[in-house]
Length: 234
Image 1 (cartoon, rainbow, N blue to C red):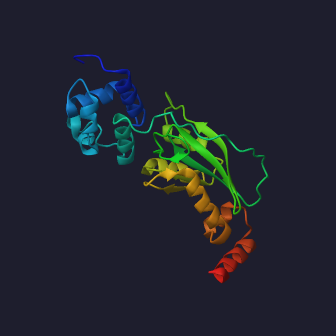
Image 2 (cartoon, rainbow, N blue to C red):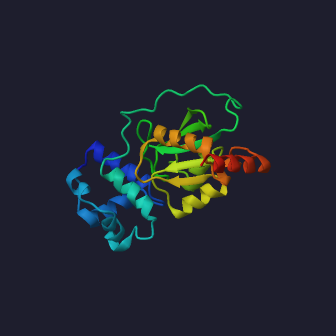
Image 3 (cartoon, rainbow, N blue to C red):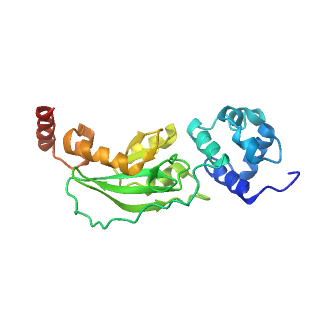
């Protein structure tokens, strides 16, 4: 580079590279050089678009999943990696405390927010949710530097969950999650993870679909009675 870049921009580029498969900071810098010129600045990065990343350097990143490119672009723009809003304290939980509950993972970067892309989220908020309550029981931080298959690693972090809420997730990652019997729910609007859990709690108590009733551990006969009671209430 013609001149050094700030620590903030170096952090952005490093995190963006982590969000992209088979990409290190040097590769990403080559693409940025073609897309916006060197040295990169906050102003140049703010104007960068996904199509620019995809087309630059003769399509160097053209075969990368669109959601991964979006996640990388968010980091380049300085979004999604602030630790200024840590998650709230965990609620006490012992296995068996909440009969009929399910475990839910939410991809998150800040506070108690659903704002993480699966391939780039810095942590997963883990909730235990039943028809009557929800508890934040764990926060699992992601450390996939040097991991060969990042999608498999991340899916493994939440392997004990039945549901995953995420701002975005690509096709290959979705396949890894589903293989572990985790149901992914994409919610691009993001927002409060706690609010999503409250809505899910209401669904569990009134109108849980068959796949969710199964995840709750209801036997087939119980699921039939559950569904009939919901129909009668409707």
